[in-house]
Length: 281
Ligand SMILES: C[S@@+](CC[C@H](N)C(=O)[O-])C[C@H]1O[C@@H](n2cnc3c(N)ncnc32)[C@H](O)[C@@H]1O
Image 1: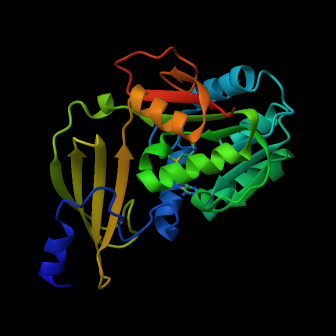
Image 2: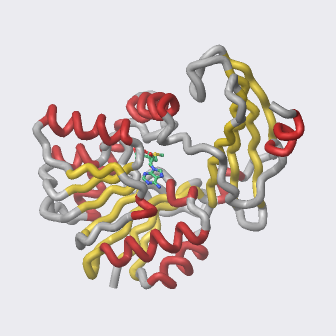
Image 3: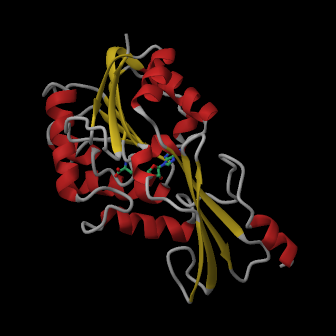
């Protein structure tokens, strides 16, 4: 590998520049991710089980009004930690979409084992083409922040048109408070095998903050025996209440409600998370 190429790749990327690789669908990384989703002791990929239980209770009681007939769509459902819990509580009209075939396979095996019914679809939700009218669409664990402006607006229009009148889009995002102590940083590590590769590799990791747009980037460059290095960019656009209100109103959403987490905790100004309920007219 040419050194100039490495130097070029280690420059601070432009806003929302794509990496060279997708971590969620990589054969090795998706296995590590699935293990992280299922590990009850970490909030790394999914929240811890007691938080998920509390969220599902809130979704069932407050969002769905205890009506198990409601049609629910979970975007980026991962291994089905929310969808399968809803199905266990009598919801039989639930769809989960995720582009990680490993997570979808796990979720499907769980529903078969527990004799539940959930419709799982392995698909990129940015190419969503569902024609169903949903009562509730969920996008949980701040994946909204990963999207650039065009992706975000296209997804919002798509969700809006897939909701019934009065249907609700429920999602969470990080606020700038999450990065209030941020300083740009660069570190490197070497591994015999690890999260990014099963073989020896070097990781160059960077954290950048884009103050004007209030966007954070966690970048990992993986160098191994392959000719090409791989770049993984994890973007996180943080949002304020005002920004969210303006973006969602432009799409047509109304009756916006804001909370500090996805269990319905009252919104506080220093919260690191905003959970939103946005209604279709
Ligand atoms: C942070 S995890 C959260 C998973 C789940 N919502 C939870 O909280 O347990 C994000 C999930 O979204 C999926 N994902 C990310 N972008 C996606 C896309 N464009 N289309 C489908 N799935 C996506 C990933 O595969 C991953 O399972």
